[in-house]
Image (cartoon, rainbow, N blue to C red; front, side, top):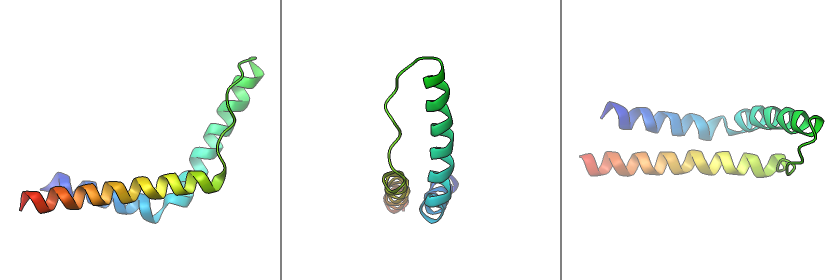
Length: 75
């Protein structure tokens, strides 16, 4: 039961802080793309900021729904 509650808490944290998480991931990805381009490797460009915000918000909602379902089935 502790694991399910921890997973629920992680999902809620992702939902609440999806913008800072997405911004940090975008900065890391941007530096990685620039480093690869400097070595001559051509990689696709990174997605827009709005897309990344939506992806992390949906990921957090999925984790929360999954955790609530597991808690409900465990009771």
